Each structure stands twice: as C-alpha cells, then as structure tokens.
Amino acid sequence: MANENVSIHGIWASRWVFILAATGSAVGLGNIWKFPYMAGVYGGGAFVLVYLLCIALIGLPIMLAETVLGRRGRQSPVNTLRSLAVQSAASPRWSWAAMMGMIAALLILSFYSVVAGWSLDYIIGMGRGEFAAIDGPGAGERFNGLTADPWRLTLWHSLFMLVTAFIIARGVVAGLERSLRIMMPMLFVLLVILLGYALTTGHFMEGVEFLFHFNLSEVPDGILAAMGHAFFTLSVGVGSIMVFGAYMPKKSSIGSTVITVALLDTVVALTAGLALFPIVFAAGLEPGGGPGLMFVTLPIAFGNIAMGQVFGFIFFVLVAVAAWSSAISMLEPAVAYWVERSGRSRAQITGCIALFCWVVGLGTVLSFNVLADAKFFVRDALGWHLIQWGAEGGKTFFELVDYLTSRIMLPLGGLLFALFAGWVLDREVFRAELGLRYPRLFPVVYWLLRYVAPVGVLIVFASELLK
Image 1: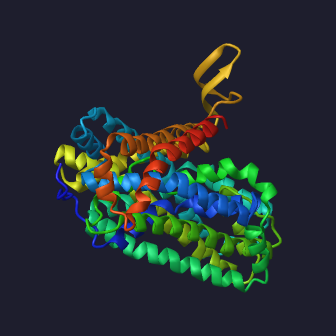
Image 2: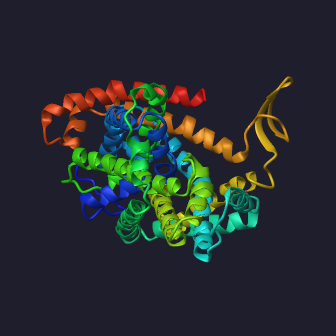
Image 3: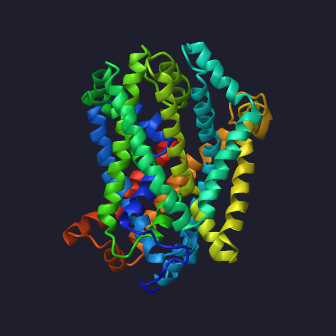
C-alpha cells in the first residue's frame, strides 16, 4: 500500500479537527460522573498524577498505534488491518480484531443511546422547573419514574439515535466535521459557564480540596481504577480513533496531536469536577459517583440553590453534547466499513446500522422495567442457565451487554491493536508514519507500545474480569 492512499470518505480540514473528533470521542459521560469522583476518593492530586502516568504508559501508546494504523491504511479499521497485515506478510485474520472492535462499538452505542437519552428528558425537566426545591426521595422517585416507563425511554433513545445517524449520514466533512466544529466549542463554553457559576457558590475551595487534596495513602486502592480509566477514557480498542486517524491530514504530527487529545480529555474531566462538586456542597449534599451523581444528586443540588434551574438546564445540555460527540465515534467505523464493502450510499448504510443499534437498545430500555426480572447466565446448584426469571444473581440484558463490551471486547481490542502495531507492522513503517519531531524519543515510544502497554492492558483485562 502506498503512503499516498486517500480515504474515499474524506479528509479533515486540519489536525485541529482530528483533535476535536478524538477529544469528542474520549469525552463522554464517564468524564462527568466517574473520573472526578475517583480523584476525590483515591487521593486527589496524588491520584491525578498516577492517572497521568497510566495515560502515558498505557493509553497514549495505544492511541498513537490506532492513529498510525488509521492514517497508514486510510480505510475503515477492518480493511486497514487486513491490508496492512497483507503488506506485512501476516495473516489477514488480524482484521478480526477490528471487526470485534466495530461490533463492540455498536453494542456500546445501543445502550449508550438509552442512557444518554435520560439527559434529554432532564433538559426538558429542568426547563419546566420540575426540580425546584426537590428533596432526595423526590429526586429518586423522578429518576425511577423515568426508567420504569419504557415508552418514555424509547422516545428519548429514538431521538438520540436519529440525531447521531443524521450527523454520520451527511459524511465526514458535511456531517462529522461540521457538527464537531459546533459541538466541541459548545461543550467547552458550557463547561466554563458552569465553572464560573461554581465560583459564586461559596463552596468552590471545598470542591478544590475534595479533588486535589494530596493523600498518597489512598492511592494504592485506586491504582487499578486509574489504569482502567486511563485505558477506557481515550476511546481506544473499538476502532474509533483508527477511523478518525484515516481522515487525518498527512502532514499533521501524530505525536503532538494525540498528546493534546489526552490532555484535553483530562482537563475536561477535572474542570467538570471543579464545576459540579461546589454545587453539590452548596446544597449540603455528599458527592457520589456513577449515574446517581448526575440524575439524583445534582438535580437535588440544582433544585435547591440560587439560579439552579438555569444552570441545571445548561448542565444537562452539556451532558447531551458530550454524549453525542462520543456516539458519532461509535457509529462511524461500521458505517465506513459497510460503505467500502457494499458500495451503497452512506445514508442507506447509516440508516440500516442505526436501526440495528436502536433495536438492540430496546433490550436495554426493557431491562429497566418490563424485563427487569429476566436474568442471563444464572448459576445455581443445577449449573448454568442462559436465562431465568426472577433469579438471584445473573445479569440483566443491559448489564450483560455492558459486561461483554467493557470488560472483554474493549481490553482485548486494545491489546490486539497494540500487538499488531508493535509486532506485526514493520518498525520503519511505524516510525515513518508517526513522524516524531524528536526522533530520539521513538525507541521509548516503541518500547512502551511493545511491552508496557500490552502488560498494562492485560492487568486491566484481568481486573475487570474479576470484578
């Protein structure tokens, strides 16, 4: 394959569009409801330093590898790995790694769309003033009422998926690039507005102390959490970064660009914590992690502080924008692949794949209500059962898909991408495509990619499986 290959899907106008795309892929719900809380619980500033070290040793090498592979292949991840494997005199079956990543991305999108749809419901609720002076039981009842209503969940799931599909169907330049040029600046502006508001609550320093207190004794308990989040937050392992790399201009520096993405992702997560925890403390609440922070704790806080309705509305718009920026990166690898394989129009392919994700997502919708008692892979005294109703243990449909993707398919995909780039692709090809400004750094980067990152991913893989 010649270096001059050009993607049939289009090319980003500049490296900054790739930065917006990759940052949008990385910045999602986890940056808002997970990382800030982990930092506060596991040692504050000490945890942040450990996390940045994990980013440097695990996340960045794999992200560099995906970007290099993508720009070298200029095709969908599946076809890129197949053609580069043949070029490297290796088995074309390496493309199966990208196929697994592509399937994982679609499965994640199927339930991500449902969860992200909750934010759309809360935008309307905040706009109507439904959370004014709400208390804990009221906030819990509001959230439980939403998840118990399959029709309401389906409505928001459908709307979220329609917008995602519309963006992808318009193409790389008219759809992805144009939307990212709007969504990502909007995300940063909304985050800054919330941060400015947090400064007026009188509890800003309390939030700073929660996030950045420096306690080394709490770090050991959070090392695995830091390693896992460093891997998952950069959106590696599913091919999203690889397909975005395929649209990256040839003259752009991959090294500096990827580092910028990792730093922006971390800055957004920390800024979200600085913006949200002072609001939580101002309402006299305790910080928490997970969906409970976003859909129960924060609505209570916004409902009981001055100007809370306005800034609560802004917050959930921010959540929706962050979710859409991630969702489009999950859909693009599959669309690119099937456009290349079938020759059909991008709009037709996008509609078919989005419909598949929507249908699978209905399983997640129903797992919160109608099918809440349906448990998969239940083990009892008689052995394993594929599905049982009302059984102890086992997983709901949503929990099963989440488990398969986040604990098995993503780490395995990231591991295989690192192994392919470090051990199958020719070293000089990797060096030439990476094009480091300081060539003496290449042996270090290559060593991290070949040895450190795979071991780190294996540790993450094992820890996730044992949870």
